[in-house]
Image 1: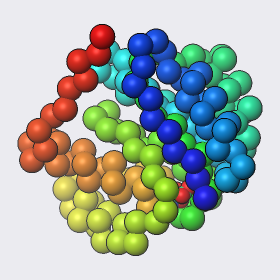
Image 2: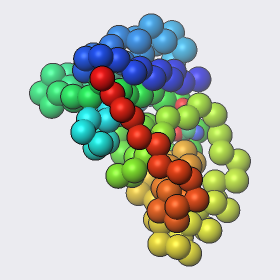
Image 3: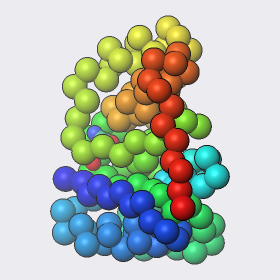
Length: 148
Ligand code: GLU
């Protein structure tokens, strides 16, 4: 069972995301990751194994951004690798998810026809790709964070 956290803050949130994930460690996990939004750009760090690995990665490659999401993963679809760790992201959207997308194969088949191709083995990535396609089509109004 995974842990999910989101923070909208007034200073860089990556350290607090990791701290919040630590409080959810008891739930069990095999990998972890965080994504933040800075200057309209999504960036992320992910790591296999314990949160210490993610924290170490962040110490070498810090993330800015006062808004972000974090996840500890308990893999159901796709091996517990860094590449399959959440958040799953495109240049427009980042997603963390707990559970299973039962119809992800059908979603991916449909997305493939429009050229939206997965880079991971997870069910979750189908959501990131789906929302990205709808944003690209203009069917979802673009949400803008007007941070302080
Ligand atoms: N089904 C998703 C995956 O395997 C989410 C697993 C979870 O709940 O952590 O990536």
